[in-house]
Length: 253
Length: 144
Image (cartoon, rainbow over all chains, first blue to last red; front, side, top):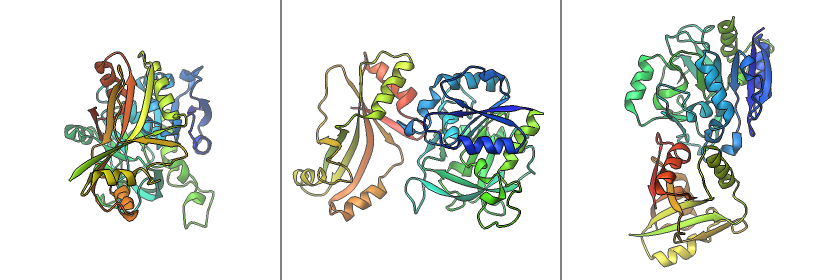
């Protein structure tokens, strides 16, 4: 059975539910502390879960991005292993320059949300679309342009860059894996479809190889139908977010 | 139109500055001290002295139990001061709150984080800022 390390930084708070969602998809999961790199390379993949690592000091994700464990994870990612960053994990991958990873520098940011009604932290259910033609470790079990309902919970989730050429490159490379959309898949760049003002509705960016993904929505919070609002039947069935973990399982086969 | 600056620091231990100090050390730089203050700049229509007396008492900006404040940056020898601001932050929410609290004379304002780095040179301070203290994709820096 494949095994995934879920990395717990000081201030992570989604490691347990992430590990449960991974296990429910048929992959062994183990929670690993940020200061313990022993045996790290024995894992098939790594997940950086959500939370507020280091209390978001300086800027969300920047302190853990400098931790030695991230250097070790980058090396494993370069070998083709799977790395998924969810919410705070997404911020860490971007602040570490691993995503989008076209240059050896920080090319994007997760800036504070722009929301016409709520300042700061915003938590809701939104829709994202599998918007890349590329088959990656994270969308193997999804149909082309499939829309899934999934929650977000963040204050700094707005993908931003001042480099306009970069966005064109990400589109050309099919690296914009998930984009915010409405229930039927229309990518309208306005609130509430785009819940945080993210540039061209970006919800998740992968690297060029497709083995590393940084996404702000929480798939582990949509892994059982019982987690999905207004659903009161077949509660133990797989929820929409499970597909991302099941895709990792397919990829690791 | 006149301008009032407000520098708000902590009189209790600043855990963010402590973590920042250790991170800078771990990145391989020699550093003696890091200090951090929240910086506000108000463009006001009216008497700046009167305004300054009022704004320092607004507890949204200054909590007397933990904060200290000043209206002028007192520079120390050998310390480099880097102000980090979000490029597109017009402080609309905060401005609205301050207007409601009676500071109607504020026409616009800016907010940022002022880092005081005790390092060997301005070049080192700039390098640390680029690698750690700001993300050029949505923020900008000013050397004070």
